Length: 51
Image 1 (cartoon, one colour):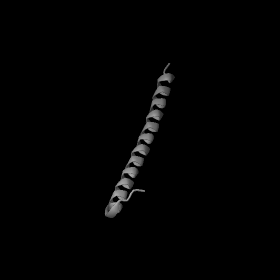
Image 2: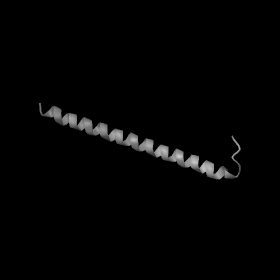
Image 3: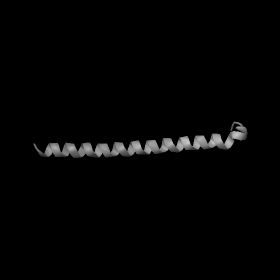
Image 4: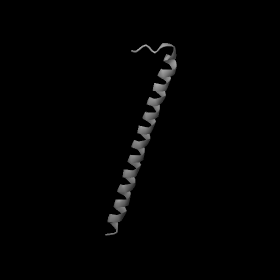
């Protein structure tokens, strides 16, 4: 591990915050994608029942 000197806490905190934000964004994206696929399936099923 590189020597971070007296700013080790700040640097590691910034890395941790960045990783946490990335994880939240990925989870939200996956959740929204899942919801969009479900809406699309529902819309397609409604469209097929009219025929």
